[in-house]
Amino acid sequence: MFTGLIEDVGKIQKIAPRRSSMELSISCGLPTAEIKPGDSIAVDGACLTVTSIQGQGFSVDVSPETLQRTTLGKRRAGDRVNLERALRLCDRLGGHLVSGHIDGLAVLSALEKSGEFTRLVFAAPENILKYIIEKGSVAVDGISLTVNTVTPREFSVMIIPHTLEKTTLAGKCPGDQVNIENDMIGKYVEKLMGKRDAEGGITLDFLAKHNFT
Image 1: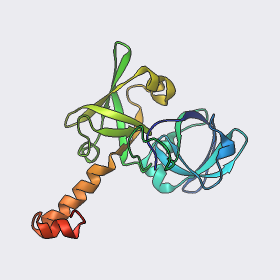
Image 2: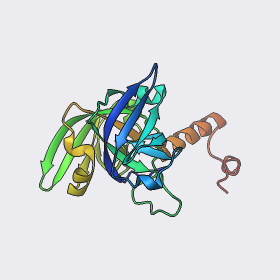
Image 3: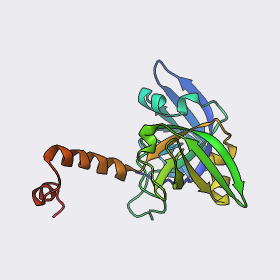
C-alpha cells in the first residue's frame, strides 16, 4: 500500500528483456541501506518487488501483466521514474490510499500554465473516467492528485510548483501516456451496489449481511 507522495525520482540504468517480462535496474536517492529484496516499491505507480540491491540502486522484475497494463514496457535506459516505498503503519497518510495496481492508461492532451501553477488535462477511456469525480483523488504515474474537472472524455488536475519539481511531470509533453490508478473506494462501492441490485435493494437484512450494523 502507498500514499501517492513521491519520495524520489530515479533513473533507469539498465533494461534486461526476457521472453515475456523484463528486469529494470534503477538508480535512486532512496536510502538503499533500508531496502531489502522482497520490499515493495512503486515505480511510476506500479507496485514492484525488489529483487536485488546494487550500491545506490535496486532491481525489480516486471511481469507480463504489468507490461501490458502500464507504460513500463515503453521505458528506455535513462528515463526518469517516480519512486515511493511501501507505506508503514506508523506513517502519516498525506495523499490517499494507493494500491500500486494500475487500472489503465491516459494520454496528456493539454498542458497550460496558470500563474505559478500548471493545469494538466488527460484524455482517458470510459473504464477509467467512470471512477473519477471532481475533487476526488487519482494517482497519475503514482502521484496522488486532486481532480479539478471531469468531462465525458477527459479529466484535469492542477499541479503546484513543488509537485512539478519533485516528480516526472515536469518532463511530460502532450501525447505522452501515463499510468492511472483510480481511487479504490469507488470500485468497492460499484461492486457492493451490484450485489444490492442482484439481491433486490438495500434492506436491514442487506446491511446486516454486509456488516453495516
